[in-house]
Amino acid sequence: MIAFITGTVVSYTTDSVVLDHNGMGWQISYPHCDAIRLNQEIRIYTYMHISENDMALYGFESDEEKQLFLRLISVKGLGPKTAMNMLARAGSSSIISAIESGDVTALKKMPGIGAKSASQIVLDLKGKLVTTGIQTGQKATSNYPQEIADALEGLKNLGYKGNELNSVGNMLLEKPGLTVGEYVRLGLQYMSRLQKGGKS
Image (cartoon, rainbow, N blue to C red):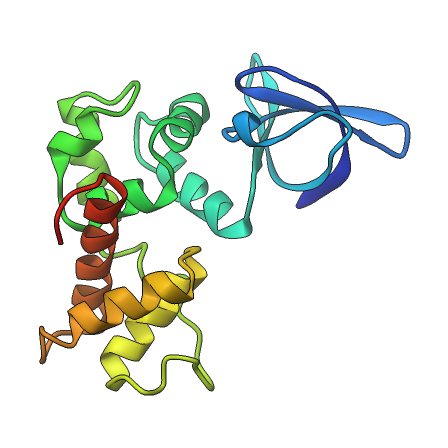
């Protein structure tokens, strides 16, 4: 399978991009076309979906986003086009936050997701997303208690940066005695509120 493609942007639409890689044009469904430009060289992580009537290449800005996509399409009744629309509309962090907090209402607001699908997503994936990015070894967050440090490392690998992590870390210090998974879920909820302009 094709893990990723590095190439030059030849053209793009609202939901797909054509990359020139060594003289071959690759058309890829991509959820971040608003962030690319013509003649830009980019690397897109890819997943090839083959069905009886279709073959399509789906692209992602990071391997973590790709892994979330693969988790989503593992849910019964949720196809790759719907999962891609979810990523394009809501973004990885909002999707993970909604799943981990069991927020069916937020999931139902995403394109193509009804009440039954939202409940199934939570049932299948809650508790299975937040540990995928956690690494062992020396951590930049080692000045925090171990559980909070592990949670912050997981958030870091989901794409959050230093200032955001410091803000989350200070908030989590006010909630002693929780598990790593609980700290990650709190952190995701906190960042989701900040991104929406709400109060923490």
